Length: 71
Image 1 (cartoon, rainbow, N blue to C red):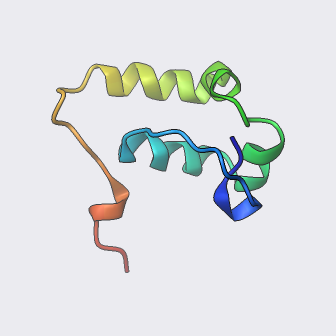
Image 2 (image 1 turned 60 degrees about the vertical axis):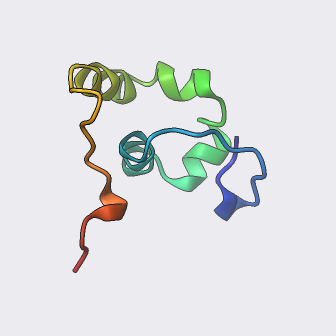
């Protein structure tokens, strides 16, 4: 998995909240070089904390940044 910005063609589907969090934690360069597998992303302590936090939320909970207005 490499970000499209870095010429990647294989992607995975994640909810927008998780996708936003992944891109807040890692740069596209980091995703392309070091975190280019699901296992590598999930092994990161920051992602583990995020997954633990988000897993306690109701199923309809979303903090999708794509739907929030940006200045």
